Amino acid sequence: MANKIKIIRVPISTPTLLPHTTTNCYLIGNEKESLLVDAGYDQQDTRIELERAIKVNGLATPNSIILTHSHPDHAPGVRQLLDWSPIVYCHHLEGQATLAAISPWDNLSFLNDEDIIRIADEEITIIHAPGHTAGHLNLYIRSKQVLIAGDNIVAEGTSWIGPPDGDMTDYFQTLNRLKQLRLSKIGPGHGKWVLNPYDHIEFVLNRRLYRENQIISLLKKHNQLTAVNLTQMIYDKLPHPSVFEVAKRTTEAHLIKLMKEGSVSLHDSLYFIRS
Image (cartoon, rainbow, N blue to C red):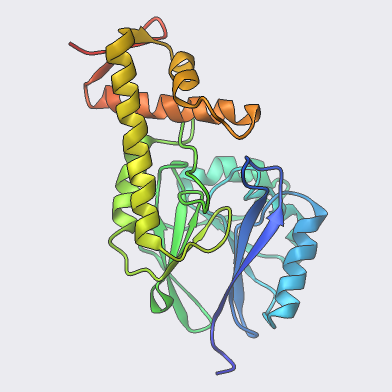
C-alpha cells in the first residue's frame, strides 16, 4: 500500500556517552504525513542526515517533533529544523529544560500518559515513562508492536539513571510496565533496533538489581562508604574516564532508592546499612 506507515531509525553522530557514538532520531509516517521523534544534537549533520532519510524513504517533511527528553544529544537539534515550523511536543515535567535546550524556539505543546496521536492513519500511544528523566516519553505503535524508548533503553549495555533528572524507583516501574506491552522490537535512544525486546528489558532489570546488590554487599563489608568510593569499586572497568560521572550518578540513584526503602542511611556523605 502506498500509504503504509514507515518507522525509520536515523542514527546521527553526536558527542554522546561511549560506547555509543550516535543518537537515534526516528521518522514515522508516509509520503503524506510524518513526525520526528527526537532531534539530535544542534549541528548541521542533524539536518543533513534527516533530510537524506526523508528523501530516500519518500516521506513527507515532519510537521511535528516529539522529544523523548531534553538532554543535549536528543533535543537541541530542533534549532536546525526551525524552517519546518514544527509543533514541538514534550511532557510538561520536561517543559522548562526543553525550552532551555531548543531556545530560541519557544512554542511547546505537551503530551501526557496514554494520549493518542494519529499519523498517516496510524494510532500512536504516548507513554509517560520516567526513569532516565522525570518527564521522559516513550511512543508505542500498537499495530506494529514497536516501542520507541528514548534513553530508557540503549542497544549496548544500560542507560545511566541518576540525579538531578533521573529516578531509579521510577525506572524500575517503567521497565516493568514496558514488559507488559506486546512488542516485536524496540527503537533505543542509541544503537541498533533491539529485536529481542523482552530479553533486553529483563537484562536491564537484572543489571540494575545486580548493581543494587553490589552496593548493599559493599556497605555491609566496609560499614560506610561515599558514593565515589562505591562507584570506584563497582565500575572498575569503564569504557572511558568521561563516563565516571554518570556512573556515579547511577550509584547515587540506587542509593536514593535504597534510602526510600529504608535499608540505607546517609550521614556526612557516608552511606551505611540501616540497622
